[in-house]
Each structure stands twice: as C-alpha cells, then as structure tokens.
Length: 132
Image (cartoon, rainbow, N blue to C red; front, side):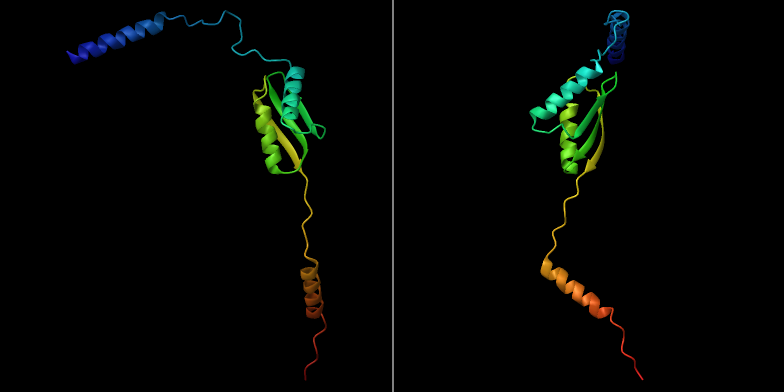
C-alpha cells in the first residue's frame, strides 16, 4: 500500500513537471539584460566615490557582459579588497577583476639602533691581527 502511494505521488509530480511551461521567458529574450559598458563604468565609479574612495588613481573598464577590470595605485591590499567589494555591489556588474599596485610605506628606522649596528659591522670587518 505504501509503495502504491509513493508511485502515485511521484507520477503526479512528474506529470506536473512535464506539463509545466518550460518557456517562462518569451522566445529570443535573454535571461540577463546587460547594461552598456559605459553605464557600468559610471555606476562603479559613482559607487566607489560615494564610499569615499578617490577614483583619480584608479582605472575602471568594463566589457559588454558586465565584467569590470579595476587597476591602479592603492595604499594597501585592504584598500584594494574594499574597492573590489564595492565594485561588485554596483549595478550591471557581473564580475570584478583587479590588477593593483600598492604604495610601499617607508620603514621606520631607529637611528640609535642603526648607528650601533653600523659600528658593530665596521668592527667585524677590520683586518684580523696577525698571530705567531
């Protein structure tokens, strides 16, 4: 009896799936409507600027399918990741690729420690005394 109910239920589901309208979209309509690349670039730049990111040093390009290429000079890897996440949230963006350059911050040097290290190196490089 249990098998009969199972087969009847499964048969009903299969018949519903077979008779369902598989053409939910009109013929010839794409599933996704891509925005023009110029519009996508403007959307990304506007979104970045609204989050306080200066786009003067950034290059933003987009292809016809919504793939955005970001490149330019940023202060850190974290800044690049933030800019990428913001770009992904912009209208018309399908994917974001990044090609970033990072600014290298100068390494702070303790002048006393550097002086000691320099004098230690000069003592070690002195000519060894002759031994007899």
